[in-house]
Length: 342
Ligand code: G3P
Ligand code: CA
Image (cartoon, rainbow, N blue to C red; front, side, top):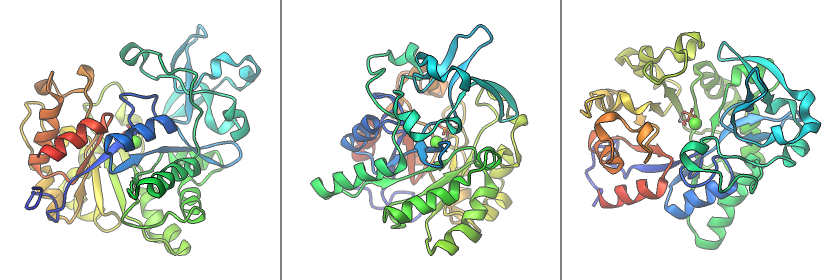
């Protein structure tokens, strides 16, 4: 019985399939989203970037393959390095204030991206069993999948899109947030009970709230993501004003976030400290009227808070006891099981 939980309004917490079911299928593929839905996710999360011809596709970063000075691919979400015809697209760009050498999604048309296949970003952890099997999906295709599930089963899974690097994309000539609202409208997916829009970039969310959504006649809940200074290996200080981490977690900042957003998406460390103790973050965010959806709950040892090594379900339960209104997980089936037993 979930009634009386310490969530914002006593409602049941939602399980958000992080990049789909990225613990079991290559992230941001239709196979990953389908597995998330079948595992019991209430929402599925596409991170969104823009193709050269202005189409929103699901990838974690604009860069789809990172290449080092020796020509070796050090991290990839698509097999572009296997396509010599795209060799001329290898370039260096500044991303998060850091020079990144590789292949970037905004340099490929959707038709070109269709010739690529997803590869496992963490092969040391998850192997390469699924490499080469799946395409990079568009947002419209992800919505079609959700619609298909609804038509077949009646189950209404929601979408939790993140606008990835919108300022970077703006410099490349694309307004990610506008494209997102345009696509949701075109596909008729604008029910505020079934969409949360999230971003690390504060200005982007304010623009959605004040300009883009009102002009489109759409009103969807927004979620301000809040990162953490202890999430190595990023150089957090190199990031823009949206990345003020701790500065976004003060009571005053939470009250300000509540002027344009319905919720806050903190790195889980803000909710559970390094000793595994519940912090006062959820109580303070709830006092500001904000939902709390922390990320990312994972089954794998390198990603667990140290105090939860070997017991990922305990980490999820601790978050539920803390009163979170939902959480992002790479293993939504595990998340749904834990919420179901809570
Ligand atoms: O959107 C919540 C969480 O996914 C943020 O981090 O890097 O996994 O997109 P990231
Ligand atoms: Ca994300």
